[in-house]
Image (cartoon, rainbow, N blue to C red):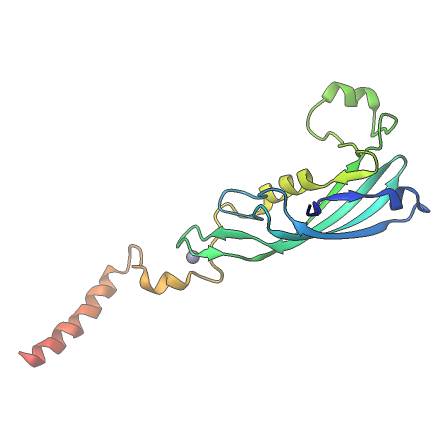
Amino acid sequence: MATNPFVFDVAEALGGDGLPVTFTQTGPSPSRIGPEMIALPEGGEVTVEAVVTPLGSGVMVDATATGRLAGECARCLAPLTPEFDVTVNQVFSGGGDFIVGDPEAEEDKGSGDEVPEMVGTTVDLEQAFVDEMGMNLPFNPTCLPECAADSEVPEPDGVSGEENDLLDPRWAGLEKFL
Ligand SMILES: [Zn+2]
């Protein structure tokens, strides 16, 4: 079974001397991550480098995912496969005794910035990347710097006069054959 590149066992950081520990994993993405037109495809190879800092019984994780997206140009529908590089920062609680801010206020909220819990000594960064990439990847990705097919696509309004100008010499040329 392939390793889920977003799930890290951070026992080494928890049992260490309090200094950040860097973990790196590469594997197939367990799901499609991104907005409608472009995303890290399910099964697409992604490398995740996570810097894990012990935080009491929890951990703070700075993680960068790199890989290749798959999508389509919103203008010409050409396939797009740009490389990506996305960083997230996520705190994981280590259980019931982990307190962030005012515990009573935290109970009242119950929505928004809830701190995910570690499962045993593992953290799952998938949701953090789902949130980050869903917000920050382009909703209307296009070819860069421009669509290769642009030269074949008729220009929009405002250039019809030029088309007429182009036609005139052609007619003029035909006249030579008449
Ligand atoms: Zn395009």
